[in-house]
Length: 411
Image 1 (cartoon, rainbow, N blue to C red):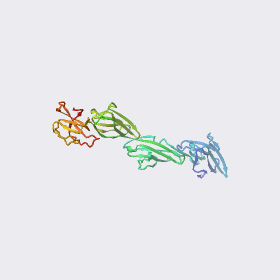
Image 2: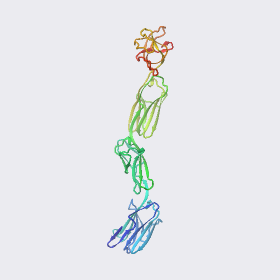
Image 3: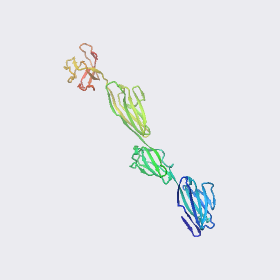
Image 4: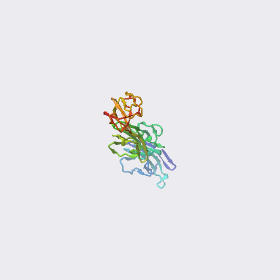
């Protein structure tokens, strides 16, 4: 750079306007001045981030700083004064604008002639404090953004990716830029995002950001209609999976009333999984008439509440195993004694079960008063014959009413 004035000396810097070095390296910046006469030559250091912070390094042949990394050498050749400033073991603090000034008139700084050299240092990227933190909360349906900035030279390049190569809000799985914007946040946007920064120096850096979306609970249940005809021989599990953030409180309701956690008939287990999922299971250890009803899973957090009926009803069907291959009608209204009787007359009042086979009986309530041949049968309970699941070949009419048979007598 050459600067000239009518009555002033010419000044030029023999190094380039921008000089780049590696950490720990050295540099010599030469300021060459022609026709200097008796004007003093000075070196100044201006901070790049704040030019008001200025350090006078040298004036004429005198070094003004006590720092071994700076040295000054003056060489005059063919009427040209060369003031050579040497900087050793370059560090980040040496990044600045170095200005050579011919101080022509102390009273009028505009009359001074100068030339600048900008010194930068090759350095790997360092994430700036202006970047988003590692945990960011956003609300469903609102606007949000993730920001990532870095210092380094050459200027760092910032790209965004998502865990498991997921799709970004921009529509692809890769985005270049400092700011990733979410114009309408959904719960599908939640997850881990990566801010990847490189500039060719070193291996680059990455910031991992956990983007959490607050939303009201969404419930999925193993919805069943349960009918139980035999005593419970194994546990019955009803599962409730809740997707929500913040973590919801999960309750089980029985006919609209909250179930306590401890009971000899059931147990409740809860667990929180990754990515804002919570899990609860209602395990029945016993089912009887006291447990008949509707069971609902309810979840609530600070955003909202949801509930889903997991069991519409538990119908407990009291059963008995009896032996029968034929029917004997005391009232002479049924004529058959076969393994697959025809539809019986609903008016049959006293029926004796004979021989052996496995059936199920459902207590449908009601009483019939009658007397067997031996005079021992009175106040009989009405039962309904059901198809045994392991005996599909038995074709009983489900509307047929018979009496429970135990031992050698009807009860």
